[in-house]
Image 1 (spheres, helix red, strand yellow):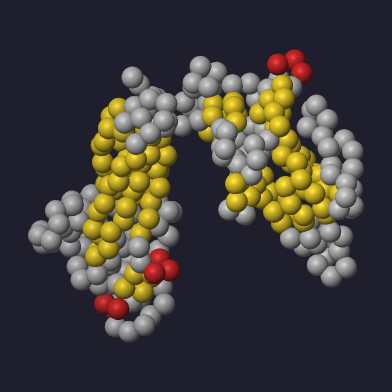
Image 2: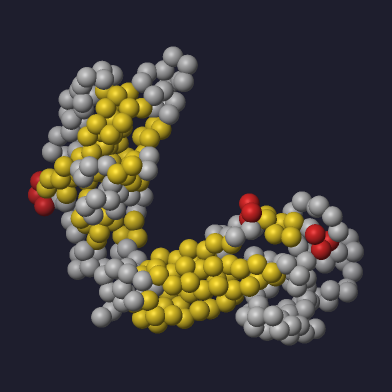
Length: 290
């Protein structure tokens, strides 16, 4: 969880806030992970915890975390753990965050039993957090090129995309399927350095690369050369993730075909900005087993 407070007053002549405090209400079945709170890269003391009335959940209070000058913003981050019986995989939950600051550096804001600012508060705000989905696994994607820019070229400038799949610490997850979609103009090389290029179409009915258009150019959906493992921009990997484990799937991918970007030389040196995180999704999320 990340809670962010912003002092929206002008940097010239604005009002500073002191002794910033945060409250966060968690629904039943969600607990705070001790020792997980940080701010500006530094570990924070654990918050004061109390039960909300009518079994409505748990209140966390972080007191006197930092000051907040005009025009600046500060954040705190911490981890929570959902109960597998109350919030199984596939469910979600929200919480309510409130922040309070004092105009007097000697006075620390306090919060009442519901999380609302109570005393010594000059300015405050409240917000409901975005829904947090409960999932058994997480997946991330990375590509090591500087500034995510790749030199274009047919089979001459391969790169490695790394998919990292991490399992929950609760239990193993079996038969996990990861589906990765590559951007247009890239080709998946599953068979290493062996060139298995063919002259077949990218898909049935794709126009020929040699066929001229009104602009004498080719576009998406054209015929192109393919290598072993080229599956129309989608690659599947199946794995078993032990409890708390993380695994990686690495694939070499050459830059291939027409695209947009900034030109720095001939076509084979054309550079295109790629987003390494834009085309990843989990095809299926399995609940923990074992």
